[in-house]
Length: 146
Image 1: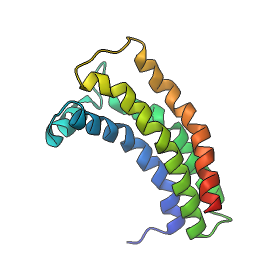
Image 2: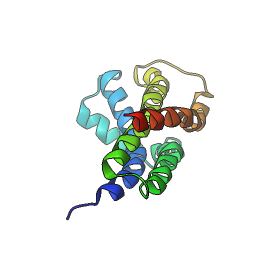
Image 3: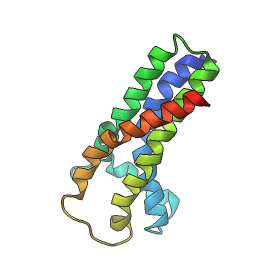
Image 4: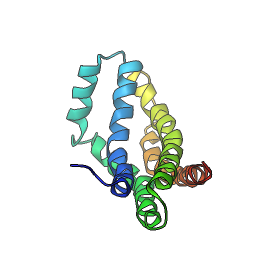
């Protein structure tokens, strides 16, 4: 079954938004914590809905810029060709990821490397999605220009 291009570019941001925070944590555990990939994958999977850790909640909060991109792509799909929509959606996705990945990695790195962070550092996860919105706008603009 082939998914139409416009539907793909409208739903891709939401799928990416759900998996990116977990993938960042797996990468940081593997690199900084020197944990084998399989063990890191198992660890993050066990933290998805765990009390006090709940990585899935971070993904849900982090969906804000991805949902905005999906909504924008949905409306833009009416006027843009599939190729142009792909450029715009990829530009927006790249804009979000260029801010979100380093921000999440900066918070997770000390924890995975055996260091300590402030007790209020987790609050940063609430602000990251809102800081990604201007990066999304820049990415959309760059995608439009391309």
